[in-house]
Image (cartoon, rainbow, N blue to C red; front, side, top):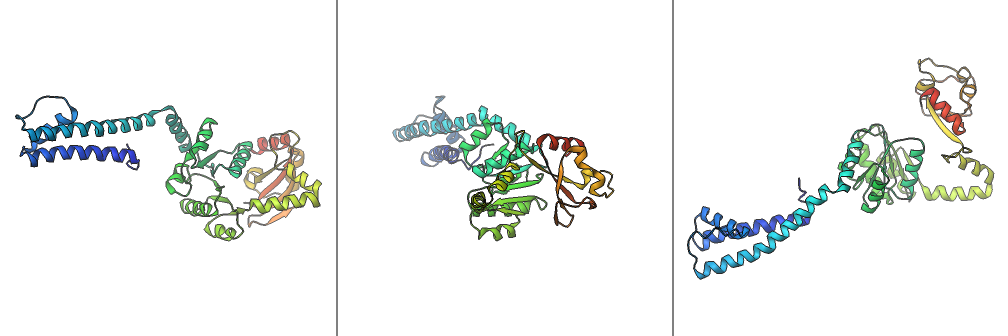
Length: 336
């Protein structure tokens, strides 16, 4: 179906209507043709098929018909050009590929939506890919979208503030949303829209100004990140405690054998029977090589370096650290 929002399509359709109605009403009112004869004369004049006039024309009718023919040549020619270009654009290879991308998105569930593919958005997708998390990018820039298409990334072209675009990205089936748009106002509107469409969605947003932090939280963001503030703190920490910061930096590096991974495991995975057990009884260190560095209670409280006799509660999570091979062993054993 043609989108009448396209100004060229609109102008082409209006031009055709204008020349057609002008011909019919002209023959009917100026020269007293019947409606059928006026319609017939308009059709054969615009299409230039030359079937013959209804009756011999006087000089005035000939001038009018000549003007109608010349006008229709330009208007019909323009309309054919515009409509042909539109139809060809709808069937070209790029659009076929994009439709296939949309079909894949429609099958996703529990994925992550990343709004904006700038520096922060790109880093977010790289991290998600390293952890084999499925994601969909929402990007309004057509050049960036072309790169995503060439890289076989799933994406939706459009404004992340619009409900229709978020729905196309599968917002109702998504597990998380990362707002990495350059403008705090755009992130705010995207968070508001996303929260209305999915009440259970985990929403993480970036912010440039500290004054935007509370607004984004009120709008429905679960976490708000201030990249500039984090960057300043990070640089200062490299001066004060450089070795500690370098070690912590390794926790965020993926894909290298000497890097360090951090993984969270829910209670349901380590205790599939549903029976609450102490950390000592799980013996995760011996089973996988990973070390437990944190515990999150069902109420959301964190315990750093929990004691071995701490009993895991339903709805809690364990946070573990290990090398890539150890984390892989953890995932295989507990199907994380």
